[in-house]
Image 1 (cartoon, rainbow, N blue to C red):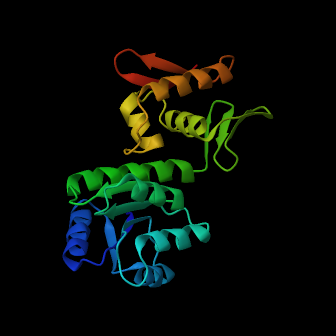
Image 2: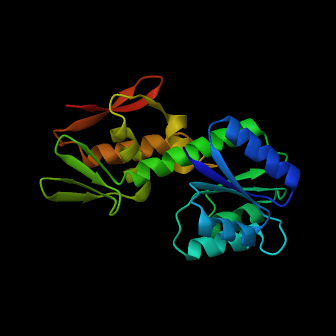
Length: 223
């Protein structure tokens, strides 16, 4: 079971988020600001962090920066009353993975948490194989019989997700949400462009192919 750390100085909101998360099958930890969050992380493991920005002692920006300075890859969903683009940009540049603006739709929050955790699980599985083809997350490479092909980060994660679930059809929107994030301003044509690039890399690969499912999306099938 995944554990979520909720960092929010508003006690009512903190308890609300925690209650909703627990009802959806997650364990929760709580902190009132960035300093308390660090104290919690020193004692307990968290798989994901939901953090407010405007907090006393250590705000969400400073907390995110200090967490990323330790090379931590824990995904962070930032929640704040700040709607302006510069605030979002600052959060993403510091290492935030996703962003929500108050008032929060808790059902959407659960969807975003699930998407972030699935993305992390896929990456942290570290390796996937299909036939003799091996995908290695540590170096973002695909190899077969000693020959390696280096992909861009997005190309690799896209192929990795498809290979992780052979024969499963993913819609363009699902792939966009999982790899680019729900808040991405890119459109679904971005998926088509990346799929075409991947196909060119592996057009002679004897182990798999990426199949277009008309009107739905894409899937990887074993040859």
